[in-house]
Every structure is written in structure tokens, then in C-alpha cells.
Length: 373
Image 1 (tube, helix red, strand yellow):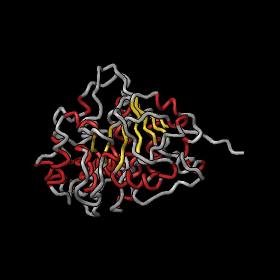
Image 2 (cartoon, one colour):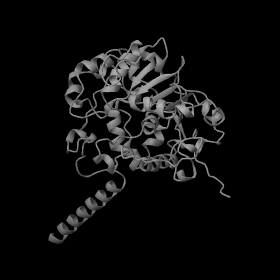
Image 3 (cartoon, one colour):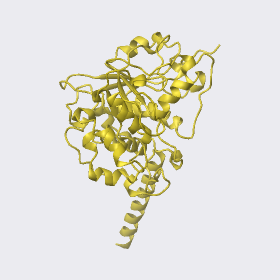
Image 4 (cartoon, one colour):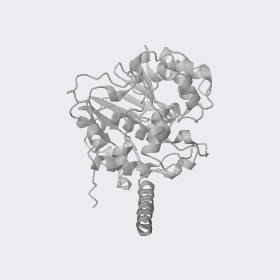
């Protein structure tokens, strides 16, 4: 009997050890997660979350097309455990509730609402009154296959000739310095969704102006996806929906129609949910750089993950691949520039994730080899 108990104990200990190693290797932590503020916080652990969502905010309740990537996403031990299509992707008026405030006011942006005035949140979110503001697409019948292309700005696209393939998708996501004029053959012309933080949008207009990025994509069919990195994004969103001048904060005096065009409406604007950004960070991009208060997934990563949680088939173009050194930083660089890495993003971890998803046929990642002389 004593021998049997020892065997059981040893087997149990071995299982715990193996599980700890595997979880550590693939981005799951056995210890409580550390919040962006540098403290251990149980509310940061998604195993503790209880999603209490209405049917109007859950993309998961929409009928899945027969070609949906979700079946592939559910397969496999590691990626299958990471996906949770119940997490709300976007905020809307229904997101602004007392129980949400109690929970999200404990996390700093972009992972929550800590430090934001109630008035700022109310001014932005209450304008997104329609339940459809909490969804990206108005889905059709179950056999409809929604194909999305997410176009990064990587130099791998220069000379790629992928413009036609990109535009053939039902919807096209672009972000930050999304230059198409002069590069139509390589990156296409269609823009359905433009993703950004207020900071990255304005910095792109300054940094890439000489490359041809003189204005944000505009047009009747273009919709805008805000990433709520801080107070600025909520303030800009509130002004943009009404087509007004920003009245407070860092961007005070900015006339929003310059960025988003005339005749705005709430239907043209979306804003990612802090829970979605936390979920993406914790489940997929749990980088060692979390110790930095500035860390968050890149704009491209958040747009690609948004597409993966709202579309049926997703193709990624212009994203970092393992041979990134063969290409310039951006496809619109007039002079070759190496890819720069910053402390607030973990692009190499993102690269691993995209290749892993491509390998498991959850999405298609555009890759390209360069013939060196």
C-alpha cells in the first residue's frame, strides 16, 4: 500500500512538472499574471473572468459559415486552448455599466479604464448606441464566407504583385501609414477598415508624409477602428462621431473631419474592448516585455486578431516573417531601412504566432523568398 502511494505521488509530481514546463514554453504562466502596472493581480488572469454578455455583443452567436476558421482554431492542444470567441471584440454603449466599471477601472489602458474620467467614457461610448456598434460585420446566411485581408506595411510587399489578390477579399484591413497610391500593384486599393491609436495615426501622418501618407484613408465604405491606448482615443472618438473639434486634452483644437472626412456617423467608428486587448495579450502574446508599462501588442497584431475573431477566412500580408532581414522596414521606403524593434512591442513573438497559425491553417500568411545574387 505504501509503495502504491509513493508511485501515485511520483506520477502526480511528474505530471505537474511537465505541465509547468509546457505552459511556460508556450506562453501560459503557472503563476499569477503581472499587470501592466507591475503588480500581481488576479483580475488580470482570464481564468477568473466571467463573461456575462448580451446576444448583441457576441460575435460567437452569429451563424458560422461552413468555411469558418473557427473550427481550425479550436483544434490542437495549445492554440485550441487560447481561442475564446466569447470575449467581446468591441465596446459600445452597452459596455458602459456599473459592473464593468468596477472591474475595468482597476486596469490601466489599453487593458482597462483606470485613470479615465467617467465623463470621458460616457461621452464616447453612449454615442455608440446601436448594438451593431459592438460588432464589426453584419453577417448573412450560414453559408456565406467572409474573406478578409489584413495588410501590414512590411517591406516584403514591395515588388510582390499582391495588389489584385488583396483587393479580391471581401474586406481589407489597413493600419497606421497605409499608403496605397503608387503601390497599387503590390498592396491594392481597397480599404474597408483602418486601425490605429490616435498617437500612431498622427505620428504616421508626420513620419511618412514624404513617403506619400498625407491623409488617413477616407471614403463612404471606410470604417475606423480605434485602439484605446489612453484617454486621447476616447476623446478623439467622441469628437469624430459628431464631426466636431476636439475640446480637451492633448489633441485639443483638432478638427476631426480632416482625419475621417465629412458626414460622420456612429456606424463608421469602432473601438476595441479592453477585455479583448487583455485577452490577446494574455492568451497569445504574453511577452517577457510585459514588465514594461508601455508594452502592448502592435497595431498590426491587434488588427489581425480582430479579423481572426470576426471573419471566416483571413489572409495576412506585409507582416513580419523569419526572413525579415531580406526586406526594408516598409514597402514604401524610398531608401532601404532595416526593421526597427521597440520595447513596447514584441515583433519576434508576433512573428512566431503568425507562422504557427499559418501552419495550423487558421489563417494564411504571405511569405516570400528573395533570390540573392
